Image 1 (cartoon, helix red, strand yellow):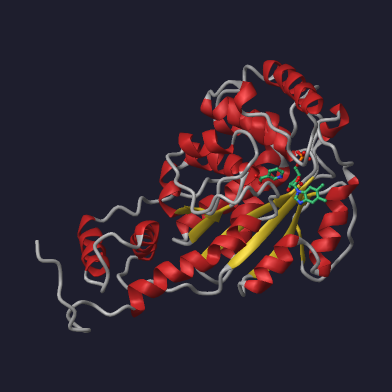
Image 2 (cartoon, rainbow, N blue to C red):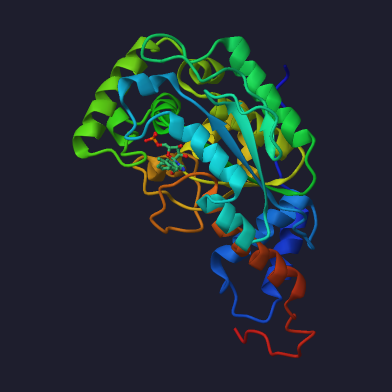
Length: 344
Ligand SMILES: Cc1cc2ncn([C@H]3O[C@H](COP(=O)(O)O)[C@@H](O)[C@H]3O)c2cc1C
Ligand SMILES: O=C(O)c1cccnc1
């Protein structure tokens, strides 16, 4: 299994042309703020001053986590498969927001502890029926970890479209994401652990104690793939693989909240240039997401107090991506509209 190679999008000549194109639009210099940054980024990703959004899609990766045996989530594990059914039925938040913004949605069974059978709209890439409890042993074997990454790579290679959003579902996965954050950013564990799907203060204290022991147990894991196998999840590993494949294909990657960003921490350790392709849709209310984004030098588009996951932030940010591309393509220039430029 070879990890996809990702090229940087840096191109000084194209960057200058994009900046000129943005600056020639009929508006005060810099007045479209982050939309200008976004337009230039998408131009660099697509290697053009006339970028287009084609067939945007969100993949929701679902997987279960053995660590739920330690009572680190306020909800039972069955919610993972039940929510997958909800996605397939079109009734979850991500279904509503994806429909609203004409975004295709696919659900991937990366390792749910449930047998769905063959189902329309569900991509079966089950590595196993949930990970092991990483409080006691590694969450997955190295083979399972590499298989999850490979499935992620292959999934993306079969997609059409040039914008890919990442979402997840997996009871217990904020615990895996917090442990990955601790190991991959070096932040103190208490800055990585939050309420997840809604733990009480005592619940968070218990989760922190569990994760402290788990991180100690896996203290020897130092390479990104070893850390991922020890403390990650199948959906997280599959997302990391899919992110690298999407960047290799020069797609724009829409990054959701805390768990999706934890997969990106792994991907960026393997191939730092993946970050050139990432649009950070929002800053989640999950404790730790702000620090994770800061570690990556990321500036999120939205701050809505979301703490859901599912790729919801990606669907909500998609209209901003359209706006960035549309202003670059469709706005008049000072010359074409015969508007006077800046005096001094
Ligand atoms: C009904 C329901 C729908 C969800 N959709 C996303 N999550 C979110 O919550 C879970 C992570 O939180 P924790 O680590 O505390 O279990 C993930 O499944 C995440 O996607 C949900 C959680 C619930 C309960
Ligand atoms: O930020 C997220 O993605 C998140 C936060 C809490 C629970 N589930 C997801």
